Length: 496
Image (cartoon, rainbow, N blue to C red; front, top):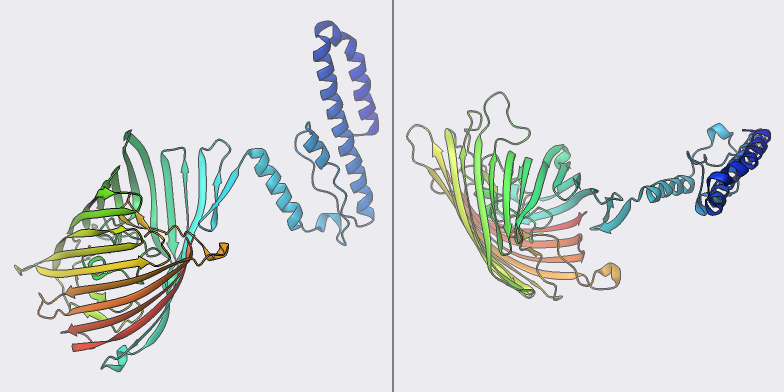
């Protein structure tokens, strides 16, 4: 583009004006002339900037940002062309993009595309201009320290640290129906695929909704077993959740339809093995169902009832049923309740019940369950039994983070976060749990009593402390016979 070309365009426009006046009205002609004048002004401004950039090249002056791909037509776009040229010690082709320049360009593109952003739980949620697409990064960091003492065996009196969870993932949706989620865990220096699914949700009639998820799914089983590791009121789930469980653990690949109504929900899950299962033989098959009901529910209180059960047919690669279950903290590998060696399993069946709720800042929850492991060779079933009773009190007056839609705990709604000048939310907790493997000749038993305190700085950051008195009696393993002691654990947690 040259100055001659710009003048030619002006002459052509003036020459065409009489003809246009004959076919269009005076108002339309004026609008057309204004539009053409704006375009010519934009072209002239671009020419001036190009000539200035060429001059700056010889004197080591950085060129301005590239002009828009389409001619500017609004006052805002025209004003953006008047930004001053920025000098730089670099040659024009080597000038590194400045953060401010880059961020302004990206913000302008997002604004023109209509993308909106909102902040929640520490990270942004992105929405497309038409509201159809949503996208959000997600993750959690749970860092623990644990110290045990008082055992008669020195191997149990140890202090350790560990990452309970170190997750990074994404979630999003398309329209009002399709959604997806993916998370990877990096704790213990291993890459582990955890939640990974796609889903569809819709409404059947007002007050009755459903969704269907397919992929690598987290169990909907027991109250604490259905609560995420970042939302449990204690550093570790109770023995009901850790012992009365399918052999494949908390996850499996399959499908889970869920039904929601105003006072409860029900789910049915059919899965095979975990994502990293043995693929040289057929998977194990697990069918799991759970339902919860809130017969009483108000803005300050809920009564919770729940039932769940599962049946599992084991593959030929999953016949070993040996269990070493956490009783006094996750990060003391010498402190477990053991079944002793157990092989020849063909399947398992488990079931349990939940009863609890909250009133104002106080909550209570009782759980119990049994697991029957079927053994080959005509041997009788091995029966595991567990129960727990737990409770908490938010002394700052906050409500417990009960999710009435799922019948589990979630992230709390902190009334006065410390980042806004408040005290955060402070919760005192207590739990008694019991586990019995003594149905086996080599099986042990154990119980633990826990006192805890949780300080929620805001809805996604917290500090936890648990003081646990534990008692075990194992018949197999490194430490046999009666033993007891204490474990003190602490956690710093961020969920986003």
